[in-house]
Length: 73
Image 1 (cartoon, rainbow, N blue to C red):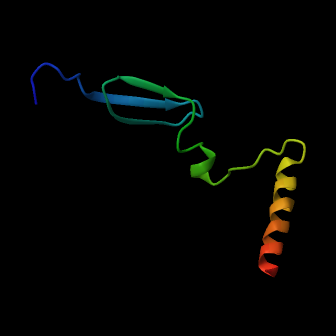
Image 2: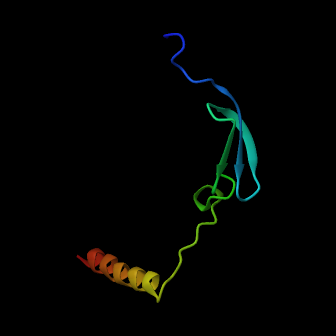
Image 3: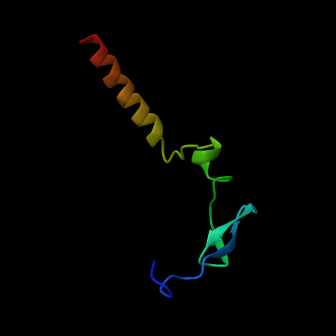
């Protein structure tokens, strides 16, 4: 590697808005994030669908019918 062209790599503290914090290494000394693996619904398994005016139910009914019709064929 060439000398003098790479940024300084140092210990970094990462803080989430949920209160979780951990350390890693980065070119920055501190990183603030809005969502992390401790509070993200995909990683925690608490993902919920937000139903706006029954759209989720309509979607499920429509594709339940389509699946039943395809099974009859």
